[in-house]
Image 1: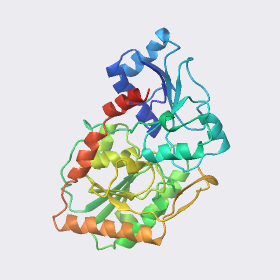
Image 2: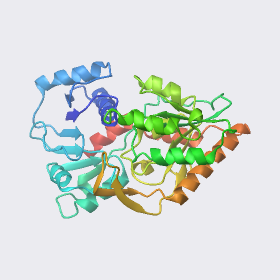
Image 3: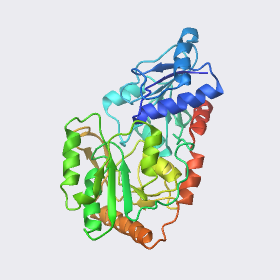
Image 4: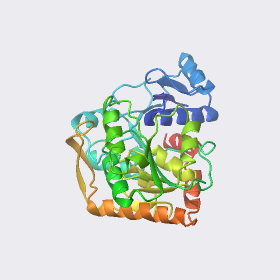
Length: 355
């Protein structure tokens, strides 16, 4: 099997690492796990058994590292080395390119990301066959189909750590312009960001002090995926006006539950978002990625969210609200069908295929 290097926690990389490890272990219980930092937030026999497998690890086995594109320089063993970065921008800086060059092959989770790798490293050793798409998944046992919420209010929901990249500045503007105090709507934000400290309060204050702040609910980070699912089950529509995504787990989870979703037609989530299962916000231009926190403007580009994109978002939100209030909002069956295609079992199998 393989030597797997990955974090195990409730953040994006950690969720991917945990679920892929668990499914790989079902296929071959000799997989060895080398966790990045101490595993947390998951009680799993597979994790600890895979860590114990380090003692009988074969160093000539393939090594797969699920981690950032700027930190792929270290590995385990002498076998073929595959980096599996989950990135959001369309260009790499020098450090990232140097890091990626340490790999023999690269796994990515979308066709969009594969084209970014090939475009940026077209003069390097990576050819089409050296870059393999391994889509991430959703736990359909947890995020299973759910009926339309019985709440009278139309509940819009966003989950994903506070960031300009996630479109949280645009979402607030759109919500305030789409509705008035007389509309029976709510916006639920579950966006705690462990990396920005006091910045969390700044975002929360921005939302709560806005025109429709009384209709906005700030939800703290949840401990388990079952808790996340319980909140999603009460929502009517997920709104994700992202400038760029490496995957967007929460968007797929909402879709798998049969919830309606609004999102940009750009970056990695185009692997599973289509006009059939999503309300897509088309992107006309890209702009330099800058937020003064995580992106300094010296890297790649992301989607420009201009007035046209805001207007489309507003139109979609009003449409969902009208359907809900008229009793005509139905379950998103196309989203459910999509969720069934993107299981973690399939992710693990596609990873093995790529080896």
